[in-house]
Figure: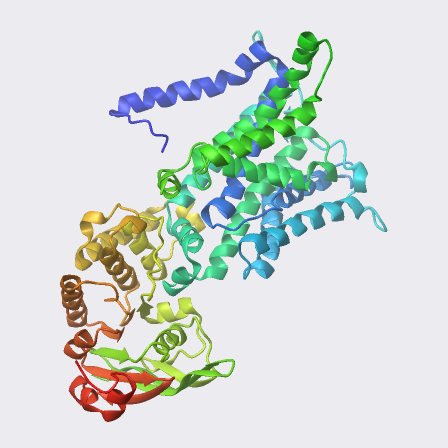
Length: 353
Length: 255
């Protein structure tokens, strides 16, 4: 999978052990080196790993171009927010809410999938794009006549993840070590991201995964080989959406606040870029894409003080520069690595010819 | 030996064009049934109607005594009819063995839960799928290319892979759409041997083919389509002498 050729099981365990240890101490190392902001960025990056992996099921495996994926993230986030905040005075537990968010997103995914089954490529992209916007606009306007979503103001004071007395929003000390909420969430998100990777890999190498890829390769042939294209596509939408729903719930709990602003078309495009840039249909590539595209824009913030010190003033606004460099990176990618930064072997060959 | 497939007065039109005009054929079990005719005669349309890719206006298709008219393609495959395509339609970016494994889809059951949890049943099912896929690659003679991408196989091997993939669905009727197109004499001879072997193993074959020599030598029964109508049916030797066939298809003389 990762291209490491390990000869003995012992070597394998040593490598896994080192990786596990590195992942365990990562938030503290990052905090010591770069400050707590970066731990938070890593947390967000892990959420995006989950999102990108979910979208990868739809786009990478089944080949269905979905430009409204963030809608499922929004659905998951709002399910959690509405049922674990003072907004309705309901405070359900996270272990019930996360699966519920996944389930609701799943149902919404099927509802979106059902009417779009006959569409492919550009047409599907347009419909899903519209769908993503519809969800956002709904969230924005469902505050009248009955206030359901609190409109553009969003929902505040969302419960953090907690189990009994243990709440992730509190600081804990372990000897000299202070475990801040960002650290605790890191471990939860890491576990969820690893689980998503596991599920993705298992799905890819299964009867269902093969059916998805067959549909992507040639839908008519797939049908003639006995694949029920409708069900298999709906399943892809449902699986992808449930990944989005879970990460949406985690996002709500982590931020403590959601508003429709967090779920724009640009976010959908960003997630799609993670998948495409990393390497469509290839799990390690998608993970890499998600991590890079979350971290890079943050890193570019440091350009402003640099400009200040070099030129005496900020010549280009960092947020403009971000989009500029981002566009440039995409163009360069398409020219030099059209299959993604870390494509699967098959994709690499596909583009090589 | 009874009738495996019975098409009764199948009628299909595209706008004003009658692609199939009340075509009736009866395919006996255990035979190779040839379907020939000039280009545009409706042979491939018949295949598409038979395998559920096209709807048709009138008539009925009865397979093993069950009416399969109006079935979806995957239901037709599940019923036991598999096909290949005139212009090869493999899953180009999957390996040869994966292509055949996709063919096992309809005869296996594992869902998302099985895929993620990989319980004992799913594992044994996967092992069975892999074993059968290897067996079929060997059967059609391309086992050494199991892990090559389908797109990288030679033309003849791609044709063979398509047959292996179709056989993976465990069909009782295998519909081959011009399998010998573009093959040289040696490849055609190999293909002929393969088809005879498939028939020998109890799978009935419905064959569209332009190679008259191949059809006449191989088929137990031949039907000739012309402008959507069946103009002749019978043993090759008889059909060969039929004046209407000579007129319509062979242009007045026969090879």
